[in-house]
Amino acid sequence: MLKNDYFKAVLISFLFSLSVLVVLPKIPVFVNSKLYKVDSYVGGYQIKIGSLNLDLSRFRSGVDVQGGDKIILKVEDFEQQDKGKYLSSLVEVVIRRLLLAGYSDFSVGIENANNGEVYILVPEFLDSSKISSLVSGSGDIEIKKLKDPNKWSAEVASELISEPSEWVSTGLTRQDIEDLRLIRNTSGQDQIQLIFTPEGKDKFKEFLKDILNKPFSINVNGSPQPIAAPVVSQSLVDQPNLDPVITGGFETNTVKDYIVQMKNPILSHLNVSVNKGVKAQLGDNFLNKCILSVLIGILVSFVFFTLKFKSYGVIGSVSLMLSLILFCALFKVFSLVINVFSIVSFVIFYTVLLEFTNLVLLNISSSSSSSKPRNLAVRQAFSVNIESLKLILVSFLSFAFVFSFYVHDNTKYFLSTLVLGALVIVFHYFYLLKTFIELFGGEDEK
Amino acid sequence: MKSSYLADFIFDKEVLSFTIFSLVLVLVYCYLLFNKYSFKFFIKIFLSASLAFISSLVLLRFSFAFVSLLSRGVDNQFVIASAMFFFLYSTTMISRYLIHLKNALPKGKRTTSLSDILSDVKKEKRFELMYSSSFLLMLSLSIIFFSNGRINTLVILLLVSSILSLISCLFILPCFLRLFEKVFK
Image (cartoon, rainbow over all chains, first blue to last red):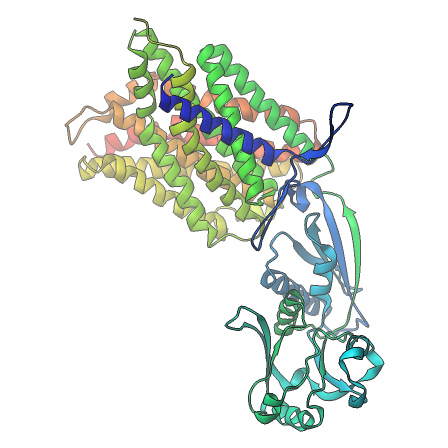
């Protein structure tokens, strides 16, 4: 083998090992012998790179194939005139909230129109309790002050903040606040900016005078616990016309969720219940059956190649297997969801992968019978199909690009799986299969 | 998806946009492959490819309605997924046929008679073999799925879509090419 060939072989081995580690679930490794002790695990890693948290512990599956949790929102005292219309608008608000908060793998609908019930189906990999609090919050806000501001001191601060009976309303509510923004200062710190209406600003100025160096609290969604309790500074008292900015002392994610709730308010009070472990919409065994059938299909194609092309068939099968593992690893890394659409997209990807491997092997075997030099036959076998492959890749990528702006919900996984498949096809055809045939396809007869 | 929806399948907003996009793709393929040939020749190929695609789409609509009738309504996402599969697979097949056709055309001529080439293309067994492998996967999928109540519908729809894609490029497209060869004489 040439130096270049060694490099290619090492690169492929490295990629293969890496892909296997990504695809594997968490497997504990426990050895307790006299010589050495091991208590570790392989696969299912959770990698943190900066703010990015890569969870490789499992493949993500949609509610349709794997089931999940069902959140029921029941409208309290539901006696609306037009029940259907009211619930439809509630469904719209819930969908808007979830989309704005960055969720996409859910379905929302009316559970029981007479009882005023709306359901949200969420897959297992999403936190249903977090979603429950996001969708059920009314979007209300209230600013409170201490009942006895003289009690305030640094020593008793946390005790006072967590005690609801110590706080009284200032009369500043949702009607007085035009907007609440999350901004970032020059040193990279998150800040809350309160923007009052003119009437709200007057009320705020009024109570500000009495609480210099004392806190006020911001309570949202009727909760007795504040999301922030900032201390009023001298600069704010001196310039009361400025919009107050709060630095630190709050959970950024809680504020983000509240901003979504504030912009999409719900007028009624909602009771929330969560049913854990709801069955898959397409039946309990859908995913298992699907994986089994795909594995059988892959095995059949390997047998077909081996019987038809002998040693070249084995090479083709091995390179197909490596490409599939690489595809699965990328699927997991990009956190794509297994659902009906991604399964169908996988079938297209594998079919094209199979066809082009078949075409190359067919060309090589027909060239071998015409006693062409092997290197020339391999080169020709790959070059003859390039035009066809290019057109298919163009259609895959343009299809995905155009419809990524158009399609919604779970359909987008069809397109993302397609793009991933196109990348793997390019790698398989131009690098993996070619290298394998060059390395293991045998030498020219001298 | 219930049968009532299937009746509007062709004119469904999503399906219609997929159809238009697929036709644009076919136009791009034809331009990339046959831009050196005469305009009449180019139109002949493009019209045949587009009509082959549209005819198989009509067949697909009837097949889906038939499957829906047999299985008393088909899940909405099954139909959309299978339709997306069909659009991609059938445009892929058509592009492959057109490349095959282009390779069979005599070099250096701007106009040529298609009727001589079409019989050569038909004789080319390799072209048909290219697709045999794809059927293996589909077949095994169906064997497993057929035993599982509701899920088999998805496999039937995918199978119907792939068979229609094959029919559109192996039978309907050559028929249209022959027809337009006579019409544009």
